[in-house]
Amino acid sequence: MNPAAETVVLVHGLWMHGLVFGLLRRRLGRNGFVTHAWSYPSVRQGLADNADALSRFLAGLRAGPIHLVGHSLGGIVIASALARQPDPRVRRVVLMGPPWTGSRSATGLQRVPGIASLIGRSMRDWLAAPRPALPGVAIGVISGSRPLGLAGALVRLPRPHDGIVTVGETRVAGARDAVTLHVSHMEMLLSAACADQVAAFLHTGAFAHHRPEERSGQGIQP
Image (cartoon, rainbow, N blue to C red; front, side, top):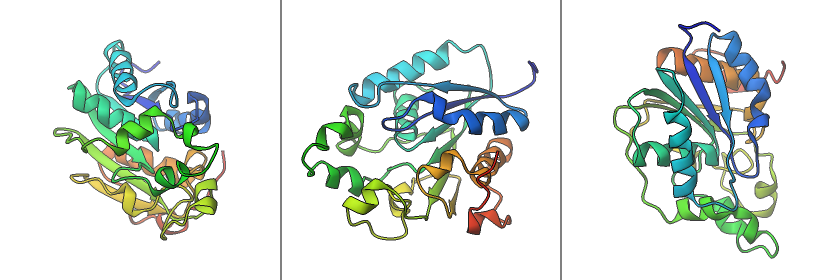
């Protein structure tokens, strides 16, 4: 292991597990980062408990600086953890498809019989919570504009959206940079274009807006 390599912790979204980051971890490793995928009970445990568990995981890492990458609800858990227990080693955070300002999908699906319970405690907690401020942390936001996903089929979402989260819902006040790619919510985990943008922000604090993939989002390849 390269002792000079910077550490990245990846946090998954609702109904997922850290294993979904296998491809993204490989790509970030090629970019010189040491990666960890942290898993948590996204449905049965509340947001504060998950946030505190992430803080404990970070506290146990013998590394610095640390960067964080969260997909969907994972970005919300990251923000909640840093708001509750700031870690001075955390420098840059990338939020991929975060339902930051709210979630029409979650709100709508709660009205669908048999699905409401699957939204989970953490998401319900977030919908009712004030949005945290994260001073001292550089935040980059990636949104998707490819409308493929279960929520998009069941709930009327205004375009552009990624099938689950609208681009407007990803807007984070105070974010340093933001980029929209033509990928769906789940394709963010597989897209080479998305991985390149994550690496660019972690390295420089800015996305690569001049790159063609910002518009096309193509490149789901190993």
